[in-house]
Image (cartoon, rainbow, N blue to C red):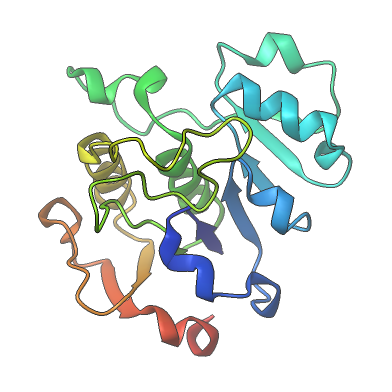
Length: 197
C-alpha cells in the first residue's frame, strides 16, 4: 500500500509508475484520478471530489461529522476510528487531518505501508503543499502550518500498529521526527521508491 501526502517532495514522482494500491489526500485526484482511496476531512474537498465524479470510481473517506451530508453519494465512507483514546486536543478525532487519517487507513489495509509526500516541514517558512494557490487551498504566501499535530498523530499510528512496517520516502537531509522512531518505521531516499514498491 502506498500512502501519499501532498508535500512538495513528491513532485518528482510519477505515481502512475507505482503499481501498489494507493491512498491519497484531498486534491490528489486532480492529477491521479485512478487513486483508489481518497481522504477528505474538509467538507469542501469532499464536495469538489464528488462534483468532479471521483466517487464513481474511487472511495472518498470523510469525518463522521460530515458524512450525513454526503451519505447519499456512492462510495462515500467515514474515516476509520482512532486506535486509541487520548486526553489532549491533538488526540480528538476532529483534530486529525487528512494525512494522518490516510496513514491510519493504510495501516488498516496492509501490513506494509509505503509513505511519500509527508514533508511535515517547510524549507522557507511558507506553506509546503503541492496544491497551494488552487481551489480550496491556502495561498503560497501564507506561513507554514505547525506540523506538531501531524507528527503526533502519525506517530500514534506507528505505535498502535507495531506489526505493520512503515517506509517513509524523503529527500536527502530530511530527518525522521523523534516521535516516529519506532522499530517498525524506516526512512529511505525518495529516489528508491520505484525500486521498493
